[in-house]
Image 1 (cartoon, rainbow, N blue to C red):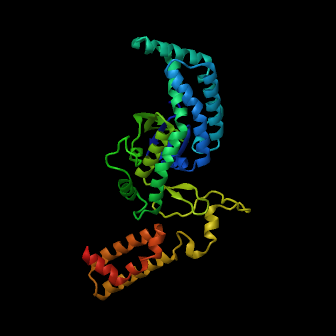
Image 2: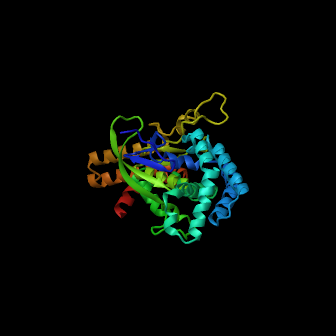
Image 3: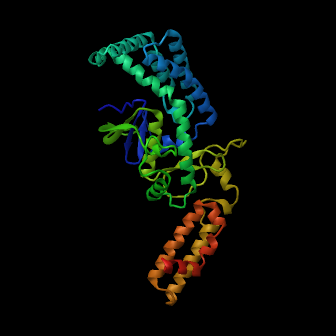
Length: 370
């Protein structure tokens, strides 16, 4: 069995990983990377898409000409060049993609597309399905993907950045169940393409098949879920949600402002990328850790955790003295832990009523009310 050879718009999902173009990543990596595509770059891509859309419209009407075709090809090549160093597009082989664009945007493919359009216009639908029009069908698939890229990336970030921000500041735990709660709060339970609130982003236009495949870095075949998409944005969105299903989610680094993927429930605060402008070439995590022990995200003596630990110790002493019921004590400690996790991910709550809500009497009163 040969090693998996991915198509450009397909992903293999296995357990908590995704395989793309011969590379393995934690699920959610590709969708998270798409959040970091610069807005200015997306605007440049959108401008380049203009000539591709003109050619697309003319081709569908059977009115494409050499001038429109040449302009569309040049725009396609510029898009590839501008995205070559930008994840997740940087995972593609630029030379292979450039060669593919040049092949598809050739006179041979254009002539076949014009013959295909003429066949459809004549009403010979059966002839239009003839294998002789394979080049035309390829061109008709590739052009829309590129023509819609700028607009669809803009729409993706308009909605998914808001959702990522909600995950970043959510009170729920950073776990599959917590992400499910955030997802339900953000997206409509019955999304449709006509909605303007972005609920349609929860939909994914894809086909699914299950195949045995040898994953990158492995020697044995695994049964994987292979998904094929009609657009890059559909692929990014799908990987984003597949990541949430296994507990992977984006987190925004306060040092560099970029999104990075967390793969467990730990409240990791800083990413491991190089901090921008740091002459010593330190990572954001190194810079963050130098800001003082009180700001270290996972240190045992974090003030938020100290409040929780003190409260649990007090509860245990009350139980030993026989002045607090063991079942109520258990519920109080569970409530205290929930508040501690909320405070670690919600700065306003941590600086606000967290400490008062962790008082012994406050916890006892809340447990009895519930």
